[in-house]
Length: 474
Picture 1 (cartoon, rainbow, N blue to C red):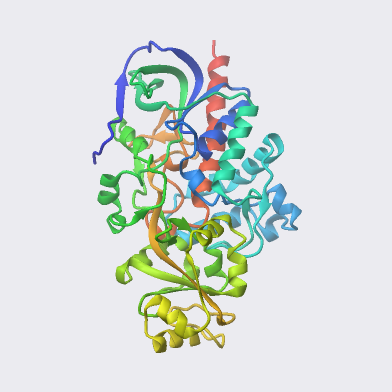
Picture 2 (picture 1 turned 90 degrees about the horizontal axis):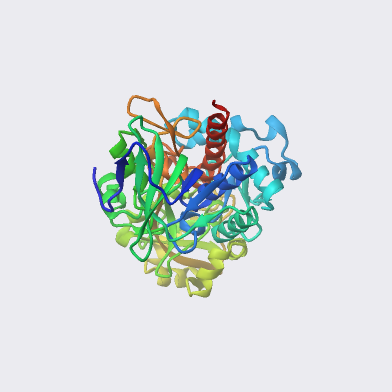
């Protein structure tokens, strides 16, 4: 598997560098910035290298929601101990969604680390989490989804950037890392990167964390590895070019779960915005242009992308009523889509059928089947039907980010094909294989930011230990 852009490995006994840093971090998203903050807490210097003028990436495009058990915020909401939630319960939910195909050691590591990571970000760096306790996201057995009050990925990035700035951590923007420098013993000794004016610089380091994201923005790799999404809208960060995988291939690193990804079946079209799946979980439905439901919406928004794309024209309509509209308006992304003209109001079934372009009798039968607490043909049981006025939003299926990547040990060190770890090369977040298994249906809500924040937290701990042990050696 090869694809542009070029990502190179350079071998050298020593590196002639413009500067030296104990830990270099490639990527300034949630993973890289979390790792940087944890390294600062451990007294270890680092530099974050970010290809863009302003760090954003997949995190800024996400909802900013992070699942975690046992946090200070959870406890404040009365969710205490193993009887309510625990790392073990969270791990079980992850594996249940992935049908047991997620990497067990990583599931355990992330489930145990994400709570302490969120608490550390709150207590030491001022990120004030709230618990989303109004509904359960698909696959979660307890309320454990955390967000900042603004409930957006952009606000999460802004808070992390503010914390990094307050901690005095250097973030080198417009620095496109294209080459890793390793010695004959496979130890990373530096990186080469390009600047916007075409000049090149080298940074020496004692450890390297790849916190760049996956390959969703690399059309060639998507076509090769995720053929069912080859023609889908890409709602993620275009800079996700597969850099980590390309470096890994050159190094003989093991790759894992390249068929795993997060899709979303609620990409508002043509406005190009994300509509919260909470509306589906609380009673909304997806209806195709024939006026029929076509899947159990409560199973998850990731696999819903494939179901929606399989409908005529790759289009569906999110249909809901006034109480669910009030819920939708809690989420800023929906409000932006509504302001852009995405929301249609229909006073009757006939008007809704005209909006969708389907037969009224077919649509009426679909809506009638939601009443009476009877299980639908796909197994979903509705607590109530929808009542006029009806509201509809036109959506399609989209690819958001990939979940496969470099295989890592639970301490985030990258593994070779034979299972042995590289001494000082780490990967986390989208650069590494996640905990969603190898298919779209394995993605549990929040798995992307789970791996980013927990992975960054663990990687920082590992890198700090490497640096401290090096300093202690005679």
